[in-house]
Amino acid sequence: MPNIRPLSTELAKKAADELFEKPERLDEDLAALRTWLSKCPHIKARTDDQFLMMFLRGSKHSLERAKEKLDMYYAIRTAAPELMRNRDPEEAKSTELIKLGSAIPLPNTVTPDGPRIILMRPGTYDPTKYTIQEVFRYNTMMADIMMKEDDNLIVAGQMGILDLSGASMAHFLQFSPSFVKKATMWSQEGSPLRQKGFHYVNTPSGFELVYNMFKNFLNEKNRSRLYVHGSNLDSLYEHIPKSMLPAEYGGDAGPIQDIIDAWTKKVLSYKEYSKEEDNYGTDEKKRPGRPKNADTLFGLEGSFRKLEVD
Image (cartoon, rainbow, N blue to C red; front, top):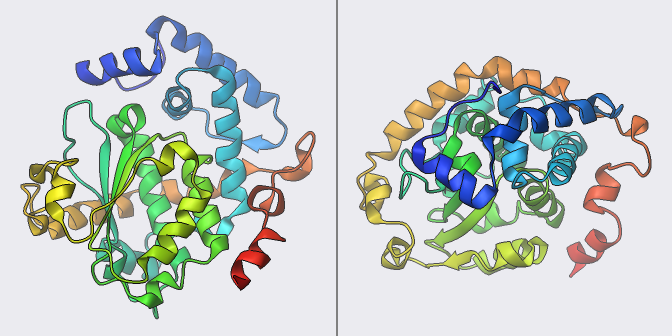
């Protein structure tokens, strides 16, 4: 049997019904993925069962799709080193950002087989002190830990709440088209996770600028899952019950600070794992065919120059 965590009854049913998971096929599929990786001179990947399983589940157990996702996962990480490399949680700025809790996974899911809910609060950091790249680098550290530990996230997907209270024009100006393109490619193509919706609350003026930019880079399916609630939390509760949310949002998930403290401890405990990640990636010089580098992946020429001027 593969060396993977057993799923809860509810998640196992969801994996079977929605992801077409067949326990009797897992050994064979994991072996096939490993064999394929051993024949890819350009990819250096983690190969443990639990890690590879994430790509099978993220691809609804299509082996070909899992290969594509795995290749893209490492290609995007290698092509955007400012977002996903040299991540040391004990480095002063990283530790400060972790303690600010600009992004935290909420402890509970709406149902036992529901998606993981992640609360993002960009207004918590000072844009004159931190760049959006530094903030995002912390988010990818957190995402890596969740991908390793969180079966709800892997099987049921993720849902985001973006609370923009306290966010200013200085925050929005950090969202260059080039950053937005990289961030959306990372979440859409460079991640095996399924997006289950994104909810914007406490949206200030100037927000439309960034919102429209993100929307332009999203595929149709993800675009249809964006919800803007303004300052009306009642309309958010229709999608995410109040009980799931931290006390500050009228919910029962305890104070935000407790969630931040628990995550700070966890992220710091993963220091070696985060540093190890730098050993994995793609060597585009060895890739058969067209390289997947910053130019070919993000198209930083042409289209961006035009966008930045508009």
